[in-house]
Length: 50
Image (cartoon, rainbow, N blue to C red):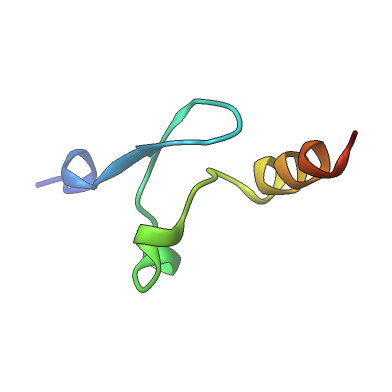
């Protein structure tokens, strides 16, 4: 029995792609907004740019 389809999903705030729950996000899933470190960095960079 494969459990992956039952994981919660979110949509990335930067690239708008869906991503699934990861074990490392178990304690902070409500705070996760980006699918990857790259999206998080790019979003912060765009936020600072005038």
